[in-house]
Image (cartoon, rainbow, N blue to C red; front, side, top):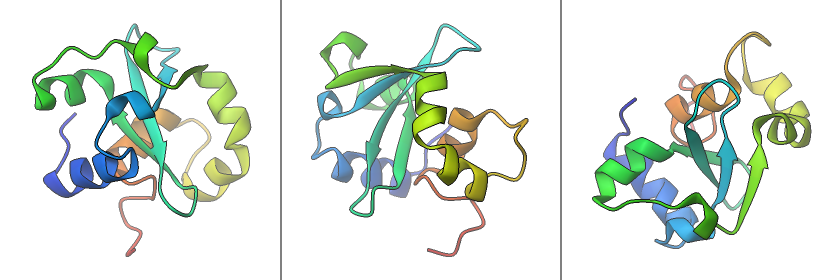
Length: 110
């Protein structure tokens, strides 16, 4: 999964340039995970851990993040947001939000 420069800039800006200011979300479907921050409106911004690590050229240790959440807890907390912003409940919520790059659907004009 690739991140565009604008997506990376938005993510890093929201976490004040430090991935340690994010929340690590364990992906239930794999051994990987995602880092989450939020924009000024509270909209989640996700980056795949392995992709971000590769782009930044450093190993990211999830235990150094501000906190950790299992995927099901994230989905419970953001249930209403996911209901309105995902086209199907069968979609992988973390991957879908990550693909959009800014927590919004890829087709959202904002």
